[in-house]
Length: 117
Image 1 (cartoon, rainbow, N blue to C red):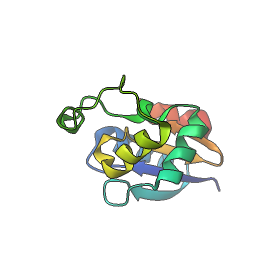
Image 2: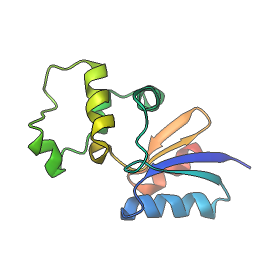
Image 3: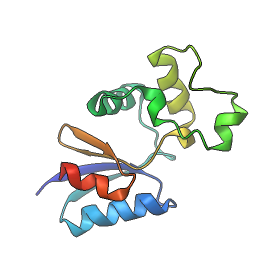
Image 4: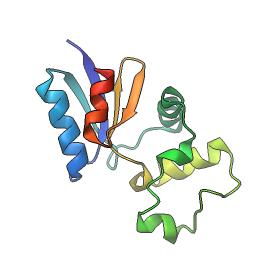
């Protein structure tokens, strides 16, 4: 049986839909509620690398916290600085993130997860 790790917020409808797709496909699920247990800098960096994206591509720019912190995606920050911002402020992390083996996708739309099953 395949094993998946889902980093999600159970209050988010897209997270719940993605979780349901995994369950419907008989996947063994490791559920990480990332607002309660944020990924470490190294974990988040590995997820970004697996998706071949920069950390700032995971940022939920529509969150009020993004504006409160006076952030801009054009800020001249290092990869590490963006990772620290995300791990210190997990509410800014796009969700859900699903990892199956070495493959990782963002479940937006939830059907994206089917590409790695």
